Image 1 (tube, rainbow, N blue to C red):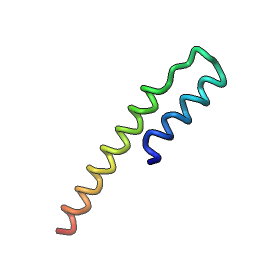
Image 2 (cartoon, rainbow, N blue to C red):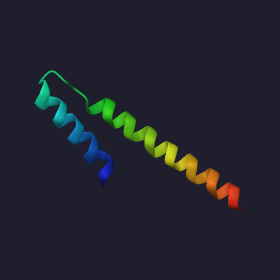
Image 3 (cartoon, one colour):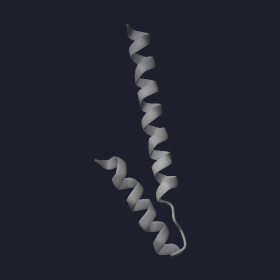
Length: 50
């Protein structure tokens, strides 16, 4: 799944720049908000056409 993988990639990129960066929780939070927004948008579209 691309969901956890993208968070890991961002975390590794941050560690390359500065080994004190801990971005895993931040990037996971952004992914979760994107998933929730997609569900809400899909629900609105289904509601619009029903």
